[in-house]
Amino acid sequence: MDMESLMAQASELQARVAAAQDELARTSVKGIADGGACIVEMSGKYDLLNLILRPDIVQFGADKIAQVVMDAYRDAKTKADKKIDQVMANATAGTQIQI
Image (cartoon, rainbow, N blue to C red):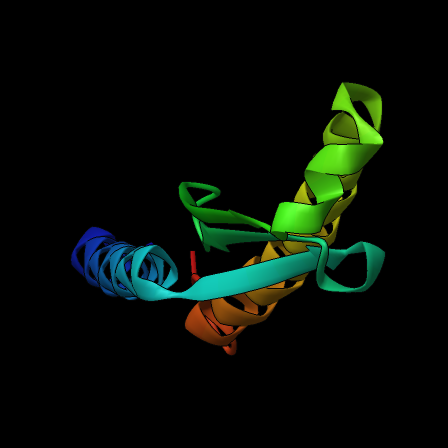
C-alpha cells in the first residue's frame, strides 16, 4: 500500500467534491405549482432564493396558499435532488481509490 499515492487520490477527490459543492451553490432550480400560481426558486444546496405568488391566489385563502407553496417547494426540491445527484456523480466519476 502506497500511502503517498492514497493521500494524493483522496486529495484529488476532495477537490472535485468541493468544486461540485461550489457549483451547486451557484445553481438554481424552480419549482412551479398550480399553473404558476406559486414559484419557489432554490439553490442546489436547498437555500431559498425566491418565492413568487401570483396575486390572484390570495382570494383562495391561507389553506390554498399554504398548499401551493408546499407543492412548489416539493417540485423545486425534487429538481434540486436530481441536479445534486448529477453533479456529484460527475465529480466522483471514475474515482477509484487504490489501496
